[in-house]
Length: 115
Length: 109
Image (cartoon, rainbow over all chains, first blue to last red):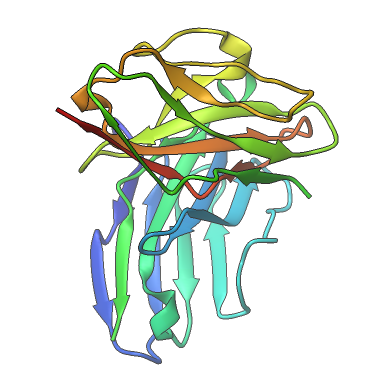
């Protein structure tokens, strides 16, 4: 594909339900990031995958949040037992190695609303 | 730990006026600094990075290690510059990008 693809683009769920968000990075990009953007706030780092290295999970806000990545392709962000404060836009980004490293290519985001 | 601060959440200028979006950082090493921009209904995208020392869409940013700043400047703002601007830092360890809170720039006609 031409860019980073995220699905679903919009998700409305009830408090307490689990949700799964998907990210398809640009082919060949070894780095993949998840960020959260609450209304009126900046980008909050969640997790970072770099090739086969152990992921940097230091930004995950609680053990209800987890993420996986299959090789250097698709990643899923799972939020268990959703709470209203989880409502936000979840952004995925990928980045190549080498000279291009540091330039992140973002998806359009998945907007999560927890009722 | 590294930190990026953008002191202004909102900034409003008139078309043709100079604009400066402030960014300060805290990191003990030699960071890489970036500016990202998000126009209305578009994806967040890279505007410029300090190592390139280039001017993009009339914007420039100089890394001032003494003041730990990376302010974004444009001498004559245009209406199409209205957007959300994020300053970001990457440590030399080559790991994650840390973003500031963002500044919403509005250029009025």
